[in-house]
Amino acid sequence: MSASAPANRTTPSAAGRPQTGAVKAYIASLTGTSLEYYDFAIYSVASAVVFPKIFFPSSDEFVGLLLSFSAFAVGYLARPIGGVIFGRLGDRIGRKNVLVTTLLLIGVATVLIGVLPDYVSIGAAAPLILVLLRLAQGIGVGGEWGGAVLLSSEFGDPTKRGLWSSAAQIGPPAGNLLANGALAVLAGALSNEAFLAWGWRVAFLSSAILVVFGLLIRLKLEETPVFKAIQAHGERPKAPIAEVFTMQPRALVAAALSRVCPDVLYALFTVFVAVYATKELGMTTGNVLAAILIGSAFQLFLIPAAGALTDRFNRRLVYGVAAVGTAIWIPLFFLMIQSRSVVLLTIGVVVGLAFHAFMYGPQAAFITEQFPARLRYAGSSLAYTLAGVVGGAVAPLIFTALYGATGNWYLIAVYLLAAAVVTVIGMLLGRDPKPEEEVALLQDAHA
Image 1 (cartoon, rainbow, N blue to C red):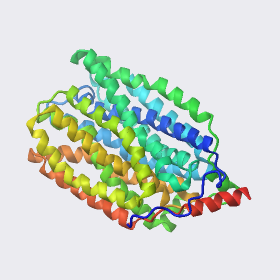
Image 2: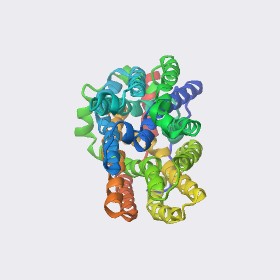
Image 3: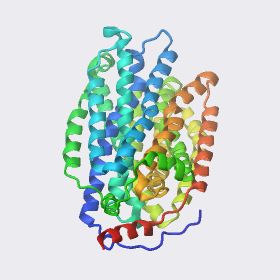
Image 4: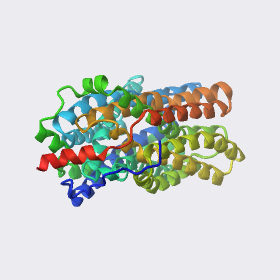
């Protein structure tokens, strides 16, 4: 992982790629994923502070929390389904149409959660329907990410893929910022009883407006220049999923392992920290939500900065250093918040999410670079979603189980250490970018 910059810096115009198209694609990718992750993020927060009480009531609060986090995990477990379905379609029929479908799927599911009766009203049907809607959300997100990344990166300069592909990576913190902001305003304006009775639903129902806005943007997009070039060359794969598994196994493993540490780290600072800080340290939900809001706001700038940094320095090296920094920071974070200081909690969350940004920012570029252009949607989607099952999906459950069994944070720090090691291995297995391959494809198509 030497600190070298990519060679053969052909400009976007030389590759037949108008700068205005790249900017529009960047905005479309950023806007769409922000809206979709708003939907996903409000579920994440609600699973920690709302759903255990209204959909999974139990005489044992700990059991209710575990059931709620199990439903949360369903969204991650469903992502590979979306990766397979939409990843195949993305390499077969193009990026644009798939992205419209995924936006609709997540938006409709989220609105329906907002009107779903609680356990008291319809009994066991309530959590069952909630899980099914969470399944639909997960399938949509599983197909969304790969397309959103390709949308911005395939319009942009391939020698600056870290920056261009970071558009989709800004989506989660932007969506998280919107979701936590909406929930924080509602929680602050309403009594606890009113918030649990109907207030939380407002945040879910508001997504209908956001989805309509996102659809208007995506419907006006053109197909990416790279996919057009693949079509012109007659290189669309007939069975992209099978080809990824049989012809790109190392790339798939490297890309998947790169996901583990960022996923686990993000789950810690946006989901489990709400449980630990309120239950163990006696802080208010408002304190925690404010810390997450501030950390997410910093990520809006750190993620593209990190992506751009890895266009100048070796991407795998920067990514690996951030993973090592994560392993060091976690025990320091838990030690500093034992004082129950809101300021220290906020600083700890901001720094933790900064380490996440320096992995997550270049993650899209790293993952897509592992696969040839004709298999990018399928390969990227599979790596992203399969890793999510062993990363973000089970992380809140593991955090809760480790904390419940030991009553302290030590094993949680060990868990993050293991995740960091896995991601460093992914960096060692991965390959450095080869922008000249894409430039040649585009130039041949325009010849």
